[in-house]
Image (cartoon, rainbow, N blue to C red; front, side, top):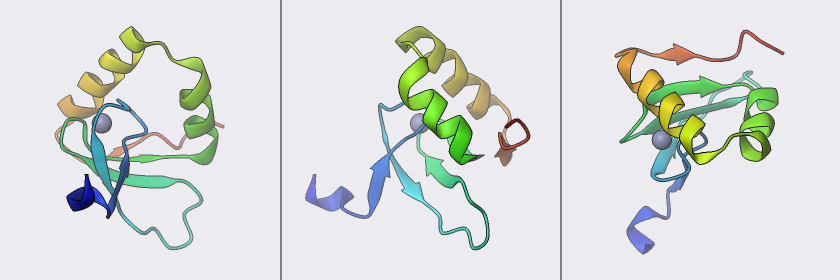
Length: 78
Ligand SMILES: [Zn+2]
């Protein structure tokens, strides 16, 4: 795991190590996951996902994010 020291657990799938991208001024999380792709997550959404999503819903969300094929912004809801 030492080769992944610069990566964090993916906030979406929690199954992969994702690269966290510094986001100045943005209060949430910006990650690039090999499984989910690149996405942004607000702090609120992140806290919900850490406690409220089951495995099946995470899998669906991961697939949805990946299928956007572009930067996905999940920060609109608070
Ligand atoms: Zn992921």
